[in-house]
Structures are given as C-alpha cells and as structure tokens.
Length: 208
Image 1 (cartoon, rainbow, N blue to C red):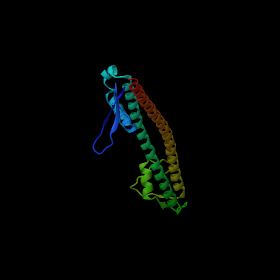
Image 2: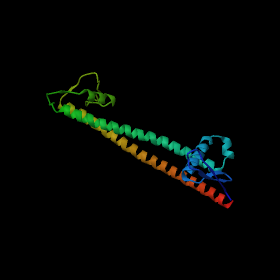
Image 3: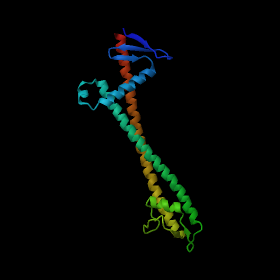
Image 4: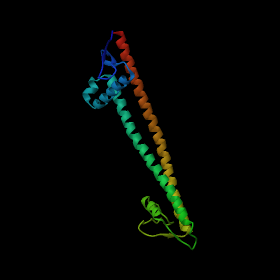
C-alpha cells in the first residue's frame, strides 16, 4: 500500500503527497502540475546528451521531444504574430497617408499643382514607392508639386503597394493559423501524455 505523508510550510495548509516506486506523486492538481512542469523541463534540458538516449526512460525521452517541439513552435508563433502586427500597423499607416494624399490632390488640376506633404514624401521614400509613370522615386528632402494627373498616378502606385502588402498579410495569417494549430496539437499531446503518466503512476501505487 502506498504511504501518505504530509508537509507544511509556516502559515500554509499541509499538502498531501503519495510515495511510490518512481518517487512522490502530489495528490492535488496544482502540485501535480508543478511536478509535471519540472519533469518536462528536466527532460528537455538533458535530451541532447547521448548517454541520456541510452539510459533514460521512454517517458522522459517522449516528454523531452514534445517539450522541445512545443518551445520551437512557440518561438515561431511569436515571430509570426509580430510580423502580422507590423504589417497591420503598416497598412493602417498607409490608409492614413492615402487620405492625406487625396486631400492634397483636391486643390490641383491639369494646370494647377499642389505640393506633396512631408509625411507623404517620407512614406513613399521609406517604402520605395514610385510616384510617376517612369518609376521615379521620392527624395524626401526635395519639394514636389503635382497636378491632378500626377496625383492620380502617385495614388494609384500607392494603392498597388497597399494591395501587395494586404496579400502578403493574408498569407502570413494563413501561416499563423497553421502554426497555431500545430502548437495546440503539440500541447494537447503533451497534456494527454502527462495525464497518462500520472494515471499509470496512480495505478502502480494502488497495486502496491
């Protein structure tokens, strides 16, 4: 029969634990989770050792492999989330600049020109967007006065750039969803494995 011991820290409720052939099994969920995390971290930290591959239990190796995969997917997922956020922010900025460009165009005509605002020049230059039909690029330190036709062309070029970024962002979202699904699947496998580990441990203890 498994033995039951209790340990308590000052001003805390005694914690019940069960001892078995493979060590100590906490009887409450919070303590079990704490020990589980320790097992996973321990396994992941030693999996690179060749001796461990020969001597470690299959449970430890499985935990190590799944833990490493989970960490890798989490790193990839964080990077993809950051890329999507950056592109979303860039699209928001592009919409604001587009509105500024359209407002600047209002006073122009075939013969009348209006000056390109500084923030529009900066955006065109930073993102390598041409403003003319010849692929002319903006020098943000120079002044540019455009008639209505030139404004239409500049705005159209900016629309093309924005549409390209939108398509890229949508592709990133597809990749993000795929990685998220793989990450969730890996954590689910880890959860099932750990649950099976503790069920097996409890079964061993009950049969002692």
